[in-house]
Image 1 (tube, chains in turn orange, green, red, purple):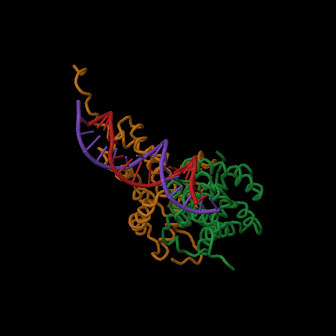
Image 2: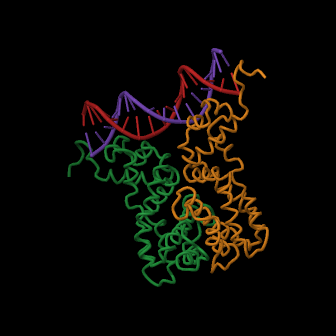
Image 3: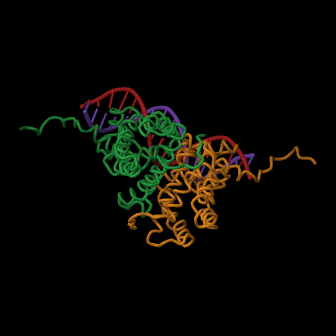
Length: 202
Length: 202
DNA sequence: GTCTATAGAATGATAGAC
DNA sequence: GTCTATCATTCTATAGAC
């Protein structure tokens, strides 16, 4: 097996290495703070290669975000089972995503959604078209209140993720998953299926 | 009253005009996205003036944030009264701040805390030293659980503000204050004074 | 496929005239 | 107090050699 001579073969994993470095960089620094140069250095490649594979920085970001979150998975997992325990299952599935391999991408997405303009708008429409439309029939809620109920629950969970995974405030950051499930589950349950006094959709 | 000749007098409100423009710009674009040039244009002054008054961009931002939030006010307002209604008073005081004149500064702060590195760290320490230390004695909680209870409640409220004032997702964005107070108050109440099953501080 | 070199644009900051 | 002019830096993006 002679492999000493000739040009170094193009590493087919380069693309994945860039994506991985990009995910970390975006998660740590946010969209603006993460430079293509830094991402390239992190992946051990030349900055120009990043453009070669992904074109613009926007496209790289979108590629990084590709299937960062599958809200459908979480919704399915939560709605599959006893209706009285949707809350705890929802929180558990949600936290599992952030602790899983897609967690870094989720942090990057959250940072970018809050930090830059175009992702904010993009995300708002994503919520409306993807999450709300899919979640409403699955949950079988009164359509009049469904959107408010879901956004209330979602805002709570996003706030929890923000404090735990982005700001990393203690003791939330190092609390166990099940502690949080037990603490937050009932609140989510109430938003989704409980009594909301005199609430009308806006 | 002759005021036609001579150099245009230095407008003493210039400093305030810059601060106001900076608040809006930081709120809309975030720390990185808001350029000193854009802020100067918004205030109708020269970019160099911004440096003249505030030095660096960091200092301008900190000046903008000066008393953006007085968590003490909210804590006092919430803890002043019947203990069984701390939740709703907390939510009401919190939302009043975001709807008030300091709302833009609060949005700017939240965007920056999530979007840039140094504000994230700064904010984390601010929470620990300012909010937690002041809130714990005021609320008279079991010190073992106090931090977790407070951060749970705070994370919920921050998530609500994020969804309502930054991402502006409907129907949360245009729901009435009292609707949200009625909906979220009980959840906050439970975190602060209710039963949290088997919760230990991490 | 991978790299060097550089264009082109935007920004934070400074010096100094008026 | 206010402005013009400019420097130095940083970044995205492209062109082209190997």
